[in-house]
Image 1 (tube, each protein chain N blue to C red):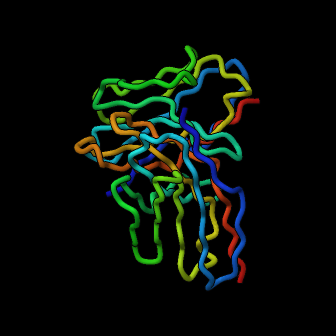
Image 2 (cartoon, one colour):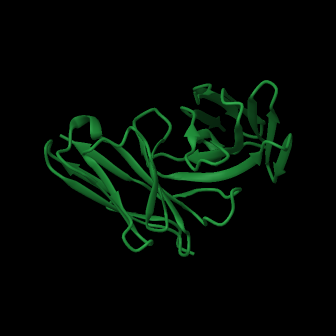
Length: 115
Length: 111
């Protein structure tokens, strides 16, 4: 089992540009989550998918952010018109989606720097 | 509302035990987790405990839960230099999927 993978691992962009990140969950995991982690803080929940349905969204997810999971496998997180405050580590996690007692397994993250 | 608090820093000597503490405010928290994060890396799940348990042991790790005081602790026995990392406590309520994390405790293990 290869674990959760994320691409790219690092992204540097200029303010105002759009960026897209990809997450591939553990094979056969039905649930997929996005979190954001800023320096010196714990991760903060952004959104989660059950298969292709987006079921929960944080108020942190402004209208510049959009997440998709079109076929219930990989997911993308797009940030439009990036701002310096978007600089953070974006973490993806997945879980089996079979049981309320399940746990979330995290990927290595994508570190975004907005100049 | 939900809030999870941890002390920021802990320093121990190799071979000693480490105890990392966490408090949470939401009484309906049902699932509690400990994750480890090494520099520049994602989060590694260490262990978890459900609110109907008081203690869970997993090799060098012991988790204690005091529901009355809403206090969770992680004890690492025979701490090694490879245990140096940031440790996050997280809680999740029944019926919701999001994890709420603390700010993390940086553990430094010196030889």
